[in-house]
Length: 71
Image (tube, rainbow, N blue to C red):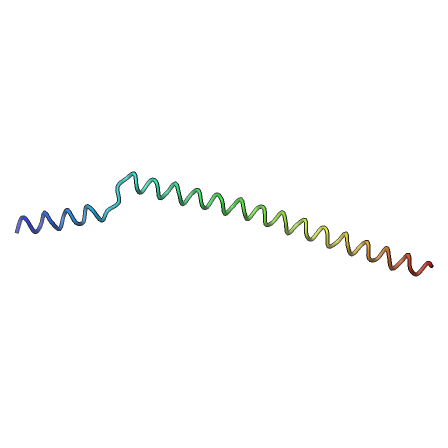
């Protein structure tokens, strides 16, 4: 009976991650979250630049149409 108890206790102990493993997982998770945040910022910057360029193209199209009307 005591041997079974000790075996089960040992199995449970092996299933629980050590503090080092837990810490390493937390560091990895926070690193990935940080990378995702940086990529999101870069994506938002790219979207903003794209919208700005679209507006510039629209302005140039209007200028061309206005110039054609004067000819």
